[in-house]
Each structure stands twice: as structure tokens, then as C-alpha cells.
Length: 425
Image 1 (cartoon, rainbow, N blue to C red):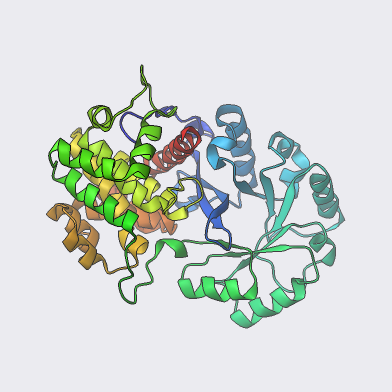
Image 2 (cartoon, helix red, strand yellow):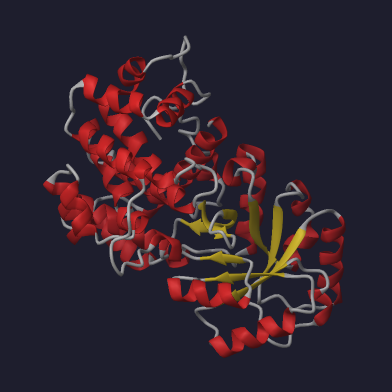
């Protein structure tokens, strides 16, 4: 993430896991629990051919990715210590490939197109006996009851299902020992509706969208971090920066822990803020401080979905910017812009008001407020990627002279770097 942090997967083996010129890349979408902490991820298998960019229903692609993921990367480098949901059908379950995946973190998600017959039921029973869990995707009324005794999770598409039907399905499933997952939850209203029905987990980017009525109060920790970010942006004198850290012992300790973690190659133990600033530099320290805003009061970097989304947006924008400039200050600016594209969600306040208090450049402000300029285009690229708008995504990338395969590679690298950073923290 930061320039001094290890980036161990420059040559990502996922880049070569497809067949011929139609390569397969991995993305992921978080699944949150009722406390809105990350519980797991659905792995998204993307093709470099835009017409079939979302190939989660291509079981041959799934098999190829499974094998390459295990042989070249390792499952934990994609999901950390969370659950990993992978789309499967009868062919995959019977292939033996699934035995290569860790049973304690793998959930086989049975696609809605799979016909539930005795063969599939037996395959699912065997997978459950081996310690794997089964999820049913896009469940509707009238499914075979036998599979409900085997499955651990039921996923319901809240975008494609009427609310009355969702309520009826929930009532029907209460007699089974199942946990409900609401998928395609894109608004706060959808989340609250499903939460009140008793859903256990929620999948979608509702958490990355602000629900702004009026400005909420900013916590003391956020005030300090915002002030530090402002001072670092204008390269305030060293003693001013150091004083803020000394006045905030918890933040001081967190920085020393970070700089002395396995993420850095440091010959000696760093013991002072001065050494930290000398090693990181103002720009990298600003990146770190800005990201801490999204980690929450306890600086939780491992289960906070908004922190993860901020890191990934920033890192992918940084990698995109590096395609057309060698100016590190420009790539740093792209990183900061990507992170701050979620600041209104974090603070639940109007973006324009927040930016008036920040010491950000006009270029960044215009990108965040109006999606203007190259930075504004990069933000829309990330948003299209998150929303799987592959046609408009390819058009925007064309204007930047970047192909979709390069973007998918950057996304895969950013995910693995994020998990590496978390494991080192």
C-alpha cells in the first residue's frame, strides 16, 4: 500500500490462470454481518473479454481459477481469515477439485441454475461431511426441502425479489437451521428492511454510500486524524506534526507498531516519531493517517468494510495513475483521491462541506465533487468496476488507453496486497 511496504506479488500468478487470450482474474465482494463487519467474501471470477467479464457461471473458468489459486497463491491470500464463497455446480462438486480447498473457510455456493436431484444432494452431503459449508444462491419458494437440511446459508437477491416474497421466504425458512444472506443490498433502506426480518449477513455496496440527512458529530479521534491529514498535505513543519503524535499516545503507539511490523524491511527498531517521518516521508504518512480515519475508533483494519474499500480504491487508482505518469506525487494524489471518494460516507456529512475544511488541491476537489479531470475519470472507473458496469467501464478505460485486463490485474494485485498488509499488522 505504502511505497516502503512489501508488494510481494508484482507478477501475479492469477494473470495467467485463464485459457488462450481469455484470461481469468479474481475480484471479491464483501459479505457483512449484522454489526456491519466483514464476515466473508464472494469470489468473483472475471474474464478479460468484456462481453463475459463476469464469469461466475462459467464452471470451467471456476475450476481453472480454483487450481491456480491454490497452486500459485494460496486461498488465505485472497480472503485472509474470512469465509470464501465460491460458485459451484454438479460438475465442480464431483470433479475432486473442491477437495483442494480448506474446509474451514470454504463455502460452496450452489447456483440457482443447478437442478437439485439425488446426485447433487449426495454430493452436498459428502461436502458437508468433509467440513465444507453449502450456500444456496438466489433461493425462491418451493425449493427441494432436502437441500435445506444440508445447506448452511440461503442467499436471497433483494433487488430481484418483491419484499412481500422476501418476507414469506424468511417465514418459511425459520424452521430450518439456516443463516440468511441478503445479496445485492445497495441502499440503506434495503439493509434495514432485511435486518429487521432477521437476515444474518448482507452483500452489496450499501455500506459505501452516505445516508446524509444532516452532519453528524465527528469523534475526537477523527478530529485529530483530519487535522493531521491537513497538516501533512501542506507539509507543515516537523515539530508541529511530532507534537500532535505526542499529544495522542494511542496514535503514537499505533504508528510505531505499524513501522516496526513485518510490512517493513527495517534494519533496526524504530522508536521515535522523527524516525517514522524520515522513513515514510510526508506523503506516505499522509496516506497512512488518511486510511486510519476509515479504520474506526479501535483502528480495526481487518473487519471494517469501509476501510477495505478505501484501501482498494486508493491503491487501484494509484496503479492506474502509474500507467500514464512516472511522477510519484501524481500517483500519491490518485491514492488520496480514491480514499477521499468515501469520506462523505465515513463522516455521514455533505461532501462539499467536508472539503471546505480540508487542505486538498483544486484538482482533487473537482474530481471528488464533479468527477472532473483525469482523477474524476479514475473514480468513475472504480465505481463502474464495483457495480459491474463493464460496457461503460471499457469505454472509460479506452479514453485512458488502458485495457480491461490491466484493470482486473490491478484489482487482483490490490486485493492480495491488502491481505498481506493485514496479515503483517
